[in-house]
Image 1 (cartoon, rainbow, N blue to C red):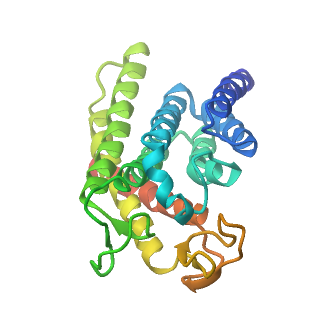
Image 2 (cartoon, rainbow, N blue to C red):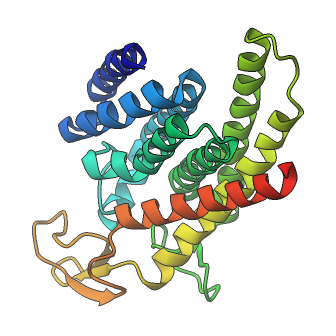
Image 3 (cartoon, rainbow, N blue to C red):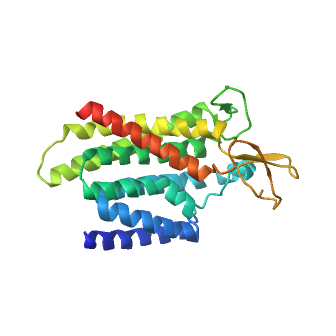
Length: 277
């Protein structure tokens, strides 16, 4: 296990350094990526680690996709395109805990939950990064009211399809990797692995929608009186302090992402329990 942790640390450090160079991670984000990656690779194994890489690579690329077009609404979001420590822990921290639990008790339900967590983070990121480019204004998930692009809790058809696609990718990769691992061990074709696509899509989309629900109801949303704009930031990009206009002041975007990941992972694990047992 020590060798796997060391290998996980080296690989995570390389990926973190590449992410920093490509401006996908901040300095603190590199630290978070190394912590999360070391645990997931070291305790979960290469299948777990490659799923994490799938999320990171695709989401980082989409964060920079049509970045100029996204700049007009960048001040609405709590953070920029470079993930920091809080974001990496929110996206991968729960996965690291599941990898730890799996190392102590190798129950396949832990991996099913991990698939749901990774599917949720991927689905939510894809929905945000592509949904904001929709030509059709988003509608609030709770009331259907038309809102401005980038508004927390707003969803679009493009964003929904992107969410499904992101979760589907995680499911497909999980299925391919688990089958490959099984064949390498000489265990033959594993029927259970086919269910990972179903688990990922169900868990990922559920978690992503829960993220939007929290964003529309209880996430802390602020208003900059100087710029007359709504934002997720306590201090606006203009440098002026903002005031809370709805939601809970302590519930920021990182905590919303963490809660959504938990719901996605729990949904996938419950579905796996029903399907497998």
